[in-house]
Length: 93
Image 1 (cartoon, rainbow, N blue to C red):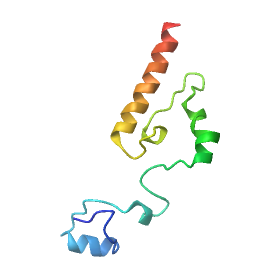
Image 2 (image 1 turned 90 degrees about the horizontal axis):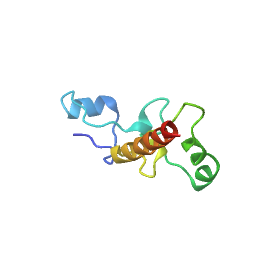
Image 3 (image 1 turned 45 degrees about the vertical axis):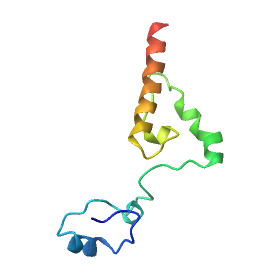
Image 4 (image 1 turned 90 degrees about the vertical axis):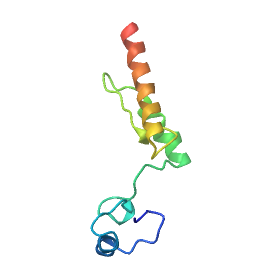
């Protein structure tokens, strides 16, 4: 297997080492991708992050990138739970 934490030798070498079965991808090496998950800086959290949790009319955003656990399924679930609670609260009023 080729893991992101292991030295990445490139796609061709990884395919050869794993008999054509790549188990993981080094996202920074994928064109037009800077990584596998969001990483909010303190400045971004103050300026943008908190605002994206607010509904824009009937549009609610959810996903791991909108949680404190970026890159993890639990973060996605917590974010979805927050959005669902906000929608439910809106419906009740």
